[in-house]
Length: 237
Image (tube, rainbow, N blue to C red; front, side):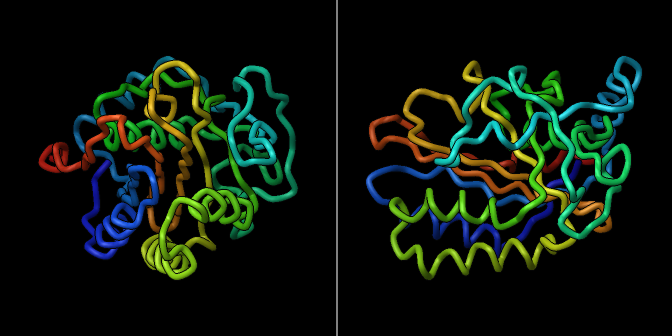
């Protein structure tokens, strides 16, 4: 997994942080190549040896009407959806029109992105039920924009800026979109001081790339300090 530098994405993320209202934003708009580096190959071999090919997902119904995650992934019922990706492709899943399962390689990519982005945590052993899939990009837009609408100054202008930058980098129409369901145990989205959060993985199989868009709104007194994925950029051989 290789972090792809993108000055436009960095600028958009910085602009969002600077326009936070009554909170601090931990926002990440990061692009990654799905090509494995040496350390990934070692971890992938472990995962390949001990996991079945198909990995079940939790249903998107676990997100409530407010766009917040409700119950534990293990309590959800899996279901079939009529679409398997925004572009109509089904390459991330077991068979056409069945999106309650993903390949172990997709699961590996998602957890590897999380490990890179949040270096203080270890997501390597997350089960696939910790993730859900979105067939409707508009649902993602509604969730993100509703959260930013009251917390982001100049939101009307900035929403076009961040969605345009994301589309330029990852070609949203060709993506499958996933999200991590916060566990209410130990993950960055359930830390003390986190008011709300969202996280989305835009996976474009044709481009062999994932764009990770996440934000945590932290209380002003939380002691939060911004971080970046720079520490692993040299570990790509």
